[in-house]
Length: 475
Length: 95
Image (tube, rainbow over all chains, first blue to last red):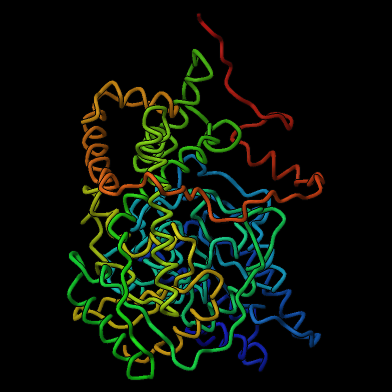
């Protein structure tokens, strides 16, 4: 059988419709590619071969009966392992859920299943999505397909690496502070974080509920748009969800805002050059480039590292290791608290424990006003920065990450250095805005560079349209 | 810098156990993060309202219809079970 693994969603769907290959052949090809490549890359935590092949067979039956197919029917994909697929393992890359199997489908999974998706497996992440490198997985680090000594980014690093190495045609990730966009940038693919509320979070293991958002990761913007339109929508199981969208016609003259704060200290020179070239490209193609200010940018990381751990400390309180998770080895516990302490301490990794404690601290009486309340107020200012900017511009562009994919272990001992890598991405989560990372160049050493495009809330269409102008033009 | 006692108190509140040899590293990590986030005090926020979430502020109602989960999957998701019941360790209080 020829190798059928270098497809976008659209190409694969054409192949299925033209009967160039069957859904089963396509799925087998990807499963084989995983077997061949994943021992080096480690993108997957678990492979759901049986599920994938049975889903592919269903689609082949439909093709044989000449039923009409949705664009995702028969297309093999990967799902981040903090999103529940009924009957499959769902670990959040944590020991505390090492043996847990999901008892229901996340709403996004239900929607993908209705569209005929094929689930190849569950991908690696930083434990409970807390991290930006995939090194904080309790099981193993994932490698960047462009350079196996480097990280794929995170936390949705497994999903990004799987798509970048043709071990899935597309993937779902989740983004709390940049966890879709930064790994997409590091792995040279498209990653999109939708507006807060546009995609249901039901069945996503909660990290920081006011920031978490599920989104698509793929090889092209068209693919990401197909996925987004499939998974979006109001869901009665997530009261923050909405089907609101801004309908608009494509603007004749696009006004692009370039925030000066996104080109300050700490930005890698090669990335800066590449992003500036991308901005020039837009200008040459008729866009008006406008300098703007987002004055509270320098406070976004501080704000995030108060709010996210605070919400995490509450969300992760549910894990006591008794109802699900790992069985405690503790003999003769003296009290129920001994069991909780033992299970949680052994079950959570060091970074997760640290963030739970940080959140517990900033929410505790005496510190609540100084930290948590203060961060919520600054969050308002960050939101207002964007509101003001969007009075003058249609979209905002800048780098997705201040640094190139770094070597595994390079930043492991410096918590602050790792947190600062989120500097351009966290603001969007704080403000609820949609954003997308689009590959816009490579470093001299061949590492991918991503351009982040930011749109006003519920203007995803504008995001996709703006991205398509530059997609695959200047690499 | 955050004290050893504070670190231990937070751990207790968070239901986490801390080994003595972890305390110093946590004190250092906490201090570097807290020093950094203290940057927020540069801003006067006395007249700024809080953004705690971004969703609609009205209540969202729905019918309270029980959802049936797959019993076998539910039981299989437990770390240990006996005859369909969750099995946990015997805890005898020694007060």
